Image 1 (cartoon, rainbow, N blue to C red):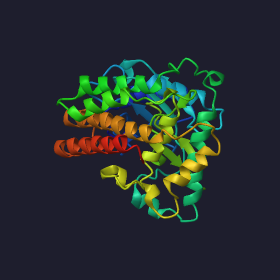
Image 2: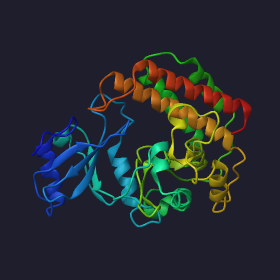
Image 3: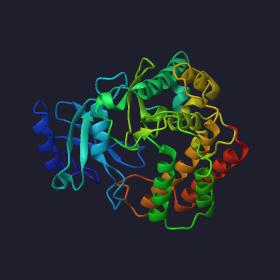
Length: 345
């Protein structure tokens, strides 16, 4: 057995997996999959070359409401037989004696994570429209799932989604940040005073974009990943999140300006929204509010990541320096302010 990365107790974890997958063979090799900035994701390879994926929370202190492994596992298990592609689940461990924290294991799905502009430009131009269409159609398929029919009707409250999100992310920053951020607080108050009426409710992924999906070699979404922020509520938040990450917004800076869909052939954000609209009867005229809100929410998430990196709670991963992290959060808040003030995308 090779040395395991931080966050993995190889002996007990190996035994736990073998109890559920006796067809596998020890020793297992554990390696951290790079790119995650919240929950930690590891590739697990058995002696015969079979791959699995293990997900666990960060290794340092985290807020009690964050990084709920059982929730993420439950959602993927519930969606196994729907039109939404998800990895096959192996099991959930809620015994902290095994690995110091809850974790779950799922099957490894073949494909590619298309993370940035360079990745997008490396895709066969003939596949790029297919990827965009599949990404959009998969989100529409998720929003068409009746939560009650798949056992997720009690996943969370369906009403007042935006108000609940505003309270949640304000609390995360209030409790988790090490600095004062006046614009964050000001934007919170402005959002709270102008929430659009919610049009129905569905399953909200919470962080839907191309690099949170495994893209198959055929250009189709092979699996939707990273369900840690999923809840019930206003699905327009997902549509706005995908629009925010599309990359053709002239206001985009930093990570938002280095996304795969900027490459020629993926189409524009307007085309994506039109395609989504073909399978939904929801009015998207208030989408600028949601896109501004998504920038604000991303600033809260990014602030939490910055604090955890600074505290050394993200395992062996490398993060941006503290000054760069603060600047990235401030940029997101400025973009949210611009969009909310102008009312345009």
